[in-house]
Amino acid sequence: MPFEMEKVLEISHIVKQFLVPDGRSLTACDDVSLTLYKGETLGIVGESGCGKSTLVKTVMQLYAPTAGAIYHRGVDITKLKGEAARQNRQHIQMVFQDPMQAFNPKMKIQDIICEPLRNFAIIKRNQVEEKAKELLRIVELSEEFAERYPGNMSGGQRQRIAIARALALEPEILVCDEATSALDVSVQERVVKLLVKIQKEKQLSIIFICHDLALVSKLCHRVAVMYLGNIVEILSGDAILEAKHPYTKALLRSVFSLKCKEEIQLLDGEVPSPLDLPQGCPFQDRCVECRGICRQEKPVLKLNSDGHSIACHLISA
Amino acid sequence: MLLEVSELSIAYANDTIVKNMNLSLEEGEVVAIVGESGSGKTTVIRAILGCLPHGGHITGGEMFFEGKNLLENTVEDWRKLCGRKAAMVFQDSGSMLDPIKRIGSQFIEYICEHSSLTKSEAAKAAEEMLNKMHLPHTENLMKSYPFELSGGMRQRIGIAMAMFFKPRLLLADEPTSALDVTTQAQVVTEMLEICRRDQTAIILVTHNIGVAAYMSEKLIVMRSGSIVEAGKTDEIITNPQSQYTKELLEAVPEIGGKRYAF
Image 1 (cartoon, rainbow over the protein chains, first blue to last red):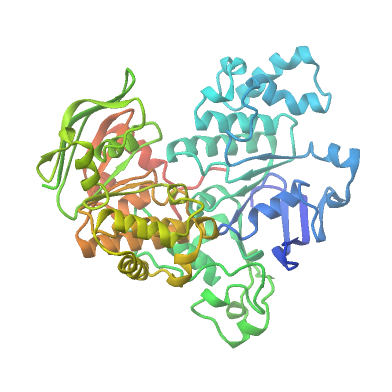
Image 2 (image 1 turned 90 degrees about the horizontal axis):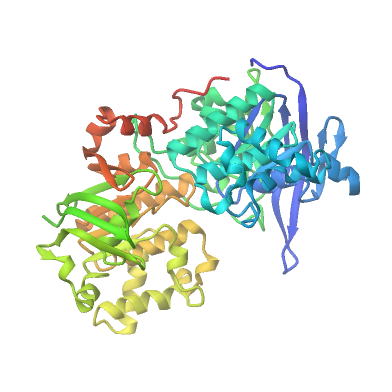
């Protein structure tokens, strides 16, 4: 890989359970471990309900994990409290899926993108205008937008504003939760190119959540595939076609492609309820190659020699 | 010719949204309209079904469905047409369904409104239709409320309702945009299967060009209310003529295709 392997964030054995009213617990993340390196884009893919958003919300300190730790520069951020927790938020910032709901519609753009800086008392009131223009330039928007309101902007422009706000504090880590899913392909491409450009300039580490495998494979250095709260495969973005886990292969077969008109193959059934996780492999009920051992023992994520990790009994056999 | 739209122009208040739109559709043919948001794709199909939102009106052109001029339709004519001969699938079928009524009772109401079946006959027919869509546990589904179902499930129910009377024309407005890749593949194949069986023509509006390419025989590329390019899907995709279509196709991410430079 062309970047230095400096660990920025280490997610270690995170378990997140939610209690439901009838007393049972819903396991959204089941022992997830991931490492994010400096200057790297890490993609997380999976169907809705697989726990991707819960995972990043624990990274964002929005949820406290049931068990496990998240280390940022050697400090377990899940244990931080009060002012220390607040200060730590400077290092990890987020871009949300729907930029319309992420802004106060009655605030001007310049106030929106400078609010994080004002919160940490980094700039004074009279510097807002100047700083806003600088941030707008970074996201390739005209300086005139500073005086506008989010209501009269297009989706792509709003998403750029969301990126500008997230970058205001010069964070080390940017978390994008389906940040381009609501955009058209042409707009999506421009936003993604902007992210790549900013990443190169600032050596930013990006966690990119997306369910579009094609986009993830184009953009990310590494891709983690999640299923039912577990990471089932971690592989390099340029080697996505060499995926070995049956679930990743099934995901690849359900992508509609322009160039090769391969027959689409369907994945039968639905994701099982996270309220009662099956014993053994989480993917057993939908896997075409399911064997006896898959029903008894849960496969662990094993690292191959080429940096490709898979959690599947069939592969290790 | 099932549907013939010629030189159609639509305006909201004084702003012209769609200019000189032409479209023709044979029985059982699938046409996809692609383009970025704001290009007027949805406005076109809403006009065909006579359900333009407030302030929207047709300022020029003609629309003929099975030889009948749609612009001369009375309210009663629209009522006979919609549901039985032409039906629509929305982006989010969840917001089309009544949140406080069970799926079954809504489905039965829909059937009874457009036919002379009794309630019990309608209930049986509705369940059969859900079975045809390969939906699991149809008995439970009929008793569920919309919020109890996943987005993919609700979308499949929306399609089942739209296809119940074997309409000649199905208008699909971003039917899979809110779904995951796996559910999208499921909904797309089911929709195609059922339309091929009943020889239903489809107008598909989508910004997912991969889905459009998979489903359609003809493709229309729209931009700011006008047609940029129209023709056979395969030809446009392998050999796009206009600059805009080229850029649009270029922007579609492909697995194993070009990656961003790092």
